[in-house]
Length: 493
Ligand code: SF4
Image (cartoon, rainbow, N blue to C red):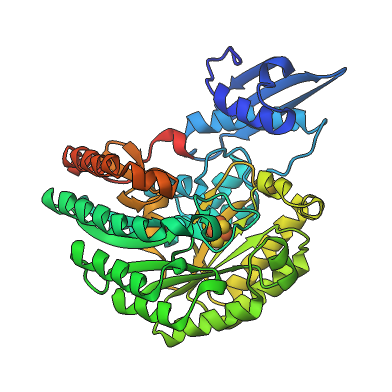
């Protein structure tokens, strides 16, 4: 029992304690904690001992305003006092304050739903949850911008995800399910044939229970490893099997410029794709070599132009902040070059710390938190100035500086798929290697079903893949149709 007052936020305190002192550190450190509250304020006090030193701190949250959630405000005070005490031993940037989950925008959305105005949301995030002013603005804006696309979510709707788990080579920071074509390319044709079969089986099951597809996303891996003929067959197969109308959002991740051709892009467009993602990650050739992406910035520009020529009027581009050897000026140059191409949306990711550490020594030394925070701030400013707004956001544990990943778009180009999956408001029928289906069942219940990761296993155990689709159908058939609405449960912030 940490707080005698009955405050029960042990898991959250443990999480923050582990950021400063490592996993399982809370019990060893904490010697005294207290929480008090009267009608004017909440006060949490923490005293810790580390090595031969001790440190104590108090955090106060005034109650001079309507609080969005008294429970989370109390927890926030407790976390804050722990972090302030821990700062004596180690400084850690906490741009998101005491919010420890992956979706701060969800908390902002919950505030909107509770009748808080934008200004109140920002001040609540700053003063109660100790979020920085820049991030509070970001969360409030994302909550506002995702509202219109989310209004389209139907209780009978679902998204289709198709995973192509092959890449021309492995990027050094990769965390996705993907195999190098040079060793696993021999499985591609058989995998592809079975993939079409899995899609047909899934479509039959889902249409049989009255569900309709609201969005398609083909990712990976690198879908552009498919031949033009395979690309057309896959896209048109999805369109036909799920009876998709041409205006339904259908994204294909073109991914790396080294395997894109005019023929593949035309095949994707003719097959039904209407949104495409070209992902440079950086426009710095030296960094591209360092991270083992075998294309140049000039090839990215050429790929972008090919997409336009193929008729894509909705193009996304991805950038990563914190790549090896990069400083803020490099990231600013990449942002500028990407924005000069005028894509409809841009996604900015923050490099995941452990991945940075797995790369080169240079990566570790260059990717310091303050520098990456600067990259994001300057990148966001450039996006605002070019007419983009943030529309979806998520956090991962262990990103450099505890920073976030954010999708930005021009008005009307917010990706339904990105928002819907982030908010867990719609089910996903996922096909292919490493794909995970998600059944949103109402009342906050979500079940996940995983396909096999490796192409060899996908092929060998394909019967089980079909059984998994049947299971998805059974789960969704029993869903609570009236209960599929935004899940505002308390522990997701
Ligand atoms: S292209 Fe994407 S999925 Fe493929 S190796 Fe690189 S990061 Fe991983």
